[in-house]
Length: 134
Image (cartoon, rainbow, N blue to C red; front, side):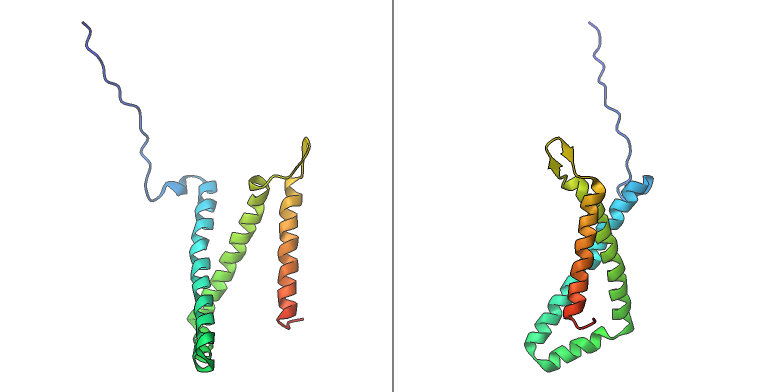
């Protein structure tokens, strides 16, 4: 009888920490995922601000003083940049995640992404108007 040969499938070695460095698309994906960390921290800061507001004027004033530190301002600027990047990448992804079809034809990707950008601008302007900037 012939001896049976046991074959093992080829398994390509993949780095567990640097796999995303191989392709620019993976790099953009990981950059978008990292922005979520800053958005989460910013959300926690907002929740703490609401809690301090509920504790009274002195606690809220202390919270506002802490936000005026250079480290806090730098974090908020970085969080703003990451929020814009996160939003823009999501709006550009929206046509693939939410295709709009009319019978056999589909709405162009630019129209779907453009509608998201227009809504973003209009909501931002409305918030600035309510805040008294305009």
